Amino acid sequence: MTTRVGVPAVEEVLAELAALEDPRMRAVNEAHGDDHGVNLSALRAVAKRLKTQQDLARDLWATGDTAARLLALLICRPKVFGHEELDTMLRQARVPKVHDWLVNYVVKKSPHAEELRVEWLPDPDPVVASAGWALTSDRVVKKPEGLDIPGLLDVIEDEMRDAPDRLQWAMNHTLAQIGIDHEEYRERAIGIGERLEVLKDYPTPPNCTSPFAPIWINEMVRRQQISP
Image (cartoon, rainbow, N blue to C red; front, top):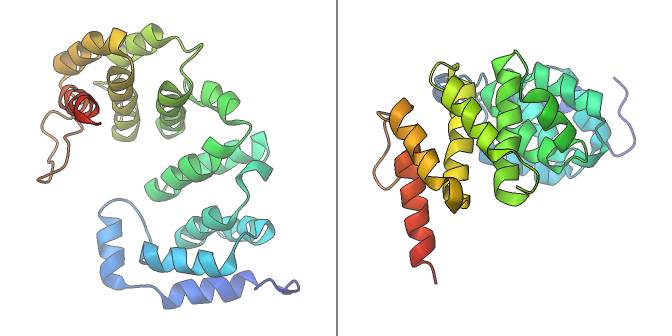
């Protein structure tokens, strides 16, 4: 591959990422479904040095390598990607960390975010649908006007308990955000959480808030009430 002026070839970047590979880090990441062994702080340092490079980002994404794709998401221009391009990328992003960064670092900043949210929400692929719910959680907080919140609660109540893990997690996040940010729906959101008991027994480290929606909602509301 020919190096563009001032732009490293993909092979050079892949070699740098390979040099950062740590077998112990890979073992930790693979336990969470992420098939790479690069420390994310080191990855961010590489991104900081490279700065924004959209062409390189696209080339890195095309390799399919997880560390390269994570780096691509850090150096890309989120608003440049087209609607179909983002849809294709999302369907390619099966690794949890890549999926999470793509949605949060790129899609949420895209002018196509709302169109994609609406398209992805009912998608039969649960990984794709989880991205739709992640975008819905964001909108519940930042721009709830026009959202059918009672309808969202209906879907959560009917489908969350039996949803695959990643989709269930995203739906639960939306449920919690509705309860936290919308007092008029708080009682219903807590009630749904209590009835479904999704993530009720999720192992939560000390000093962290449980993802069980009733606990999560009550704790965040409590913090809001005591904040100056």
